[in-house]
Amino acid sequence: MSTAKKKRRKSPRQRRLPRGPNGGVQLLLIQNVEPLGKQGDIVEVRPGYANNYLLPQGLATIATEHHKRMIEKHRARLLEIERARLASLRAEAERLSQQSVTIEANATDQGHLYGSVGANDIAKALKAQGFHVAPEQVRLQGPLKELGLYTVKVHLGQEIEAEVNVWVVPVVGQEGSPPAAEEAGGQE
Picture 1: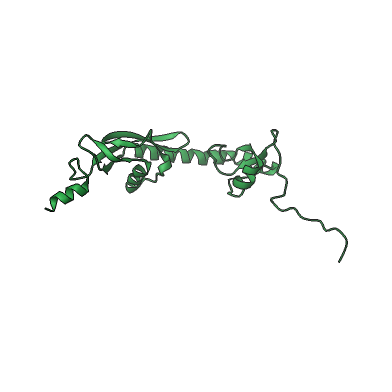
Picture 2 (picture 1 turned 45 degrees about the horizontal axis):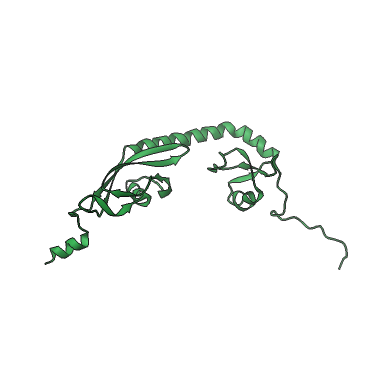
C-alpha cells in the first residue's frame, strides 16, 4: 500500500455553496416558490433550506455568474410565459365566478346542518363541474353550518381569486329529520 495521501473528492453535500451578503446561500429560483419569489429571482436562504428542500426538489439552482447571465438573456421570455399563465388564470377565474355549486346536507327544520360543509366538499363539487380546484385553494371564514347561499372565494394563485356561489340545500325528501328516521317511518 502506498503511504501517499489520496485526495478525497468532496461530495455534492459537502461542497461549499456561495454565501450571500447576509450569510445565507444565494440561489436562483427555477420555479415560483410562493413565500420566496418568482422564477428567475436570486434569493438568499439558509443553508439547510437550500440543501434539504430547494435544491433536491429542483426548485432552485446555485446562483453562478453563468446562470445569472442566462437569466438576464431569458428574462423577456420568462415574462411572456408568466403573462400567459396569468391570463389563463384570469380566464379560469372568470369562468369560475360564473359558476354556482349546490351541495346537499342533512339539516334541522330551522336550517342548521347536522354536520358542516367545508372546503373539501366545495372542491369536490367544483371538480364534478370540470374545475381543477384543491381544497387548499377554497378560502372559507369557517365551515358552513346552515342552509343558504354563500359566496366563497377560491384562490387560484398570485392574487387572483374567484368568487363562487355555494348553495347549501337540504337532502332531497328531507323534512327536518335525518334520512334514517325517514326511512324507518316509510317502511311501516
